Image 1 (cartoon, rainbow, N blue to C red):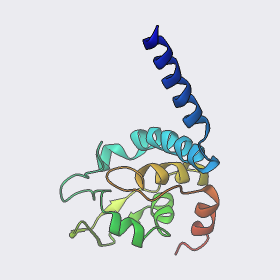
Image 2 (cartoon, one colour):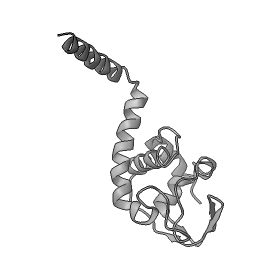
Image 3 (tube, helix red, strand yellow):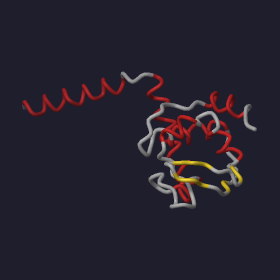
Image 4 (tube, helix red, strand yellow):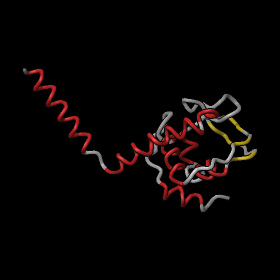
Length: 139
């Protein structure tokens, strides 16, 4: 009997804690889970399941310093790709082509939320409004 009461109280507390999430936490969780699916379908083949990249061919997505320093151009890279530009990621140079991705701003926000909160990165939510703002500044 005591075990059932304790289990019930534990379940009730878990439900209460979950229901106390802020709107930002709920949006982050939603973007992250959808971004995971987009990553699997459009990015994983080159950047790897764990974001480790492909040796000297494809850059890893695990360099938080690079991601933070270049957060405003990440949407441009995803949307329009890169051609021959030299990147230094995890202290390794990369030069080559990344194809443009035909994604809407919300999809870019979701996949970047996933990338910037996976593989050792913890950068918070990337919103569609942020993507719209950053895309207007692409060169």
